[in-house]
Length: 400
Image (cartoon, rainbow, N blue to C red; front, top):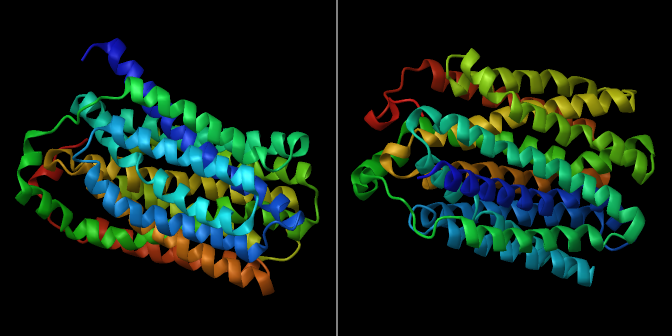
């Protein structure tokens, strides 16, 4: 493949995945406005988050499998069009039942992108550059999150809350057109992809099966921060929307910083992604302590949440980007991503429903303390995986 064609395809993949985060993170800023205007309650916001993540996780099981069969062009374009339709529909209606149903559709639509995009990038680069290219692609999550929050924060005071959904929907529609024009029309298949036995062995790898539990724990934490950060600052510190946006902006900015420093850390820890995750979850647990205590200043709370977001972005990159690339030789990268994404967002969905109900009657300290326990549990399981000496399959021995 010519370098120019590779660059255009990579740019299309990058913009496409940033677009879905713009059309996801808008709810973080829109949630307090929706509650204040009486459009939705805190429980309904939690329900929106819950159905989004549950449909996203279930969609990963189906779309992870389809992503190893159909072209990235078809999968990504369809997903972006559905994301655009769901956001525009919410913006036009601003009605609770419609918003919940359409946000669920948005969750399923966004599950159609990451597996096919990661597989496509893996096929575009030689083995020595796959991890770096995948890590750069993963930074689109941070870029999209920053843009999504900035766009919603600037739009709501000027144009109203409906435009926090209409504008991201319009951008997703434009991104769908670009993906259709630039992404490959047919999937590139690895020779091993025809060997179903290798794929089956890969999906039954004990490391992968145990890793589903830490992935679920990190999903509760990562998406919990994204969903509840804005309401935490408004409820705890009684600040207005503009001030809240200033504090919440620390979350996507530090999350992006975490994405950008992932590869140096990965090299520092001798290309052992589970060690990166263990250290990051330890940082996460420590930074949650001040949030459990009364009287923590707003600035310190913003820094703690931002550090949590940065640490969890490193864990997310390990679980959903670097580790799955090791399955390129078995031809099932998209399916492995689908399984890990399923666990991640099943956790996020469960957390949204549980904490949405919890916060109706209780404070945030209990939620943050439970996150500390989940981080500790994930560290223990990752330590077991790292040090148990589990045998790796032959196609996992080569670095990505």
